[in-house]
Image (cartoon, rainbow, N blue to C red; front, side, top):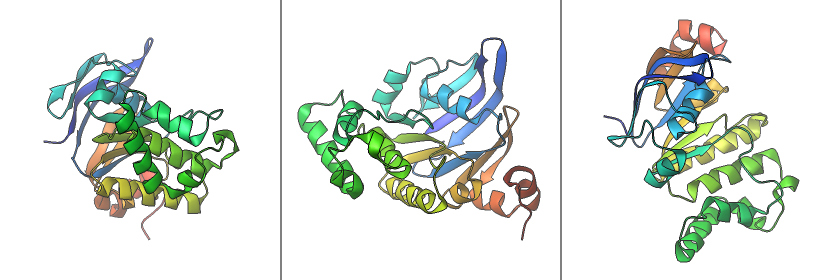
Length: 238
């Protein structure tokens, strides 16, 4: 049994249904990646898992507890954190102020300890702790978004397109940091367009298409299966 289980999840916006009976079983302590074409419902799924979008049917369980209809702040208190693709930091605030926002529910002593831990984990942020975020690079902002999410010391980290608009070199650095975070005990579920990069860092992969599961299995299987590569990764097996 995984740390996060999704059963027959249906969700959407208004009269439009986006997810049609999604199922998911996220292994604790591992990195899992969701890939699929634009419009497959990947980001909608993450919003439903975080509680920003309430499902129309189905069940979401976290560590055995039914969280299907729980609001986002309760899921945060249970150990889930989410880094959206857009608007994941406050540009007008400093690095330190962003981290304080991420830990606003923490006692003062715990807040100080968690901030120190993030500066140890992200030395570049420590060097820029008083710098306004609007003056930072895209890669630095993404590192800050990860650090801010980790202020609550989540058991499960949901990441939506963590390498969007980043250069290949910076994207690789981000994934090195994600793997380090995973080794430190955090389960990670990623939605990512850079499928090759993300799957190579993952133990498990889920392919979505048209709001449904198209394939799921070991990430290595997805990377080496010629039909899956041609259909969903856009490349033929070399």
